Amino acid sequence: MTGYLRNGYCEVPASDFGNHAIAAEVTEEFLKFSARQGNDLRPIPGMKSGCKWCLCTTRWLEAFKARGSEPAGDRIVPKIFLNATNEKALNKINLEDLKAFAADKQE
Image (cartoon, rainbow, N blue to C red; front, top):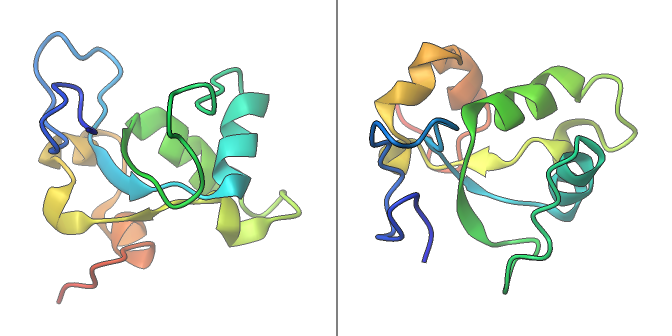
């Protein structure tokens, strides 16, 4: 089960120094990108494209910023679920950028 607390939600307690606030569906392109950045998530049991996971805000932001220079383009940026993303993500990421990659479009 995803979430720092393994409860299915992207809660960010004080002990979560990685700020795992982004509720996302990972892609194979993102998993490869993250591995190249030094954080290979693929050894996590069951981790594969299509998995929902609470990502660190810094890693999602790195993928977002790198999309223009990556052959995979926007596919390296995981779609996010705004309704399950913790508001602490806004400490590092602009809401409009999150909305641009939202799987659950909101007005």
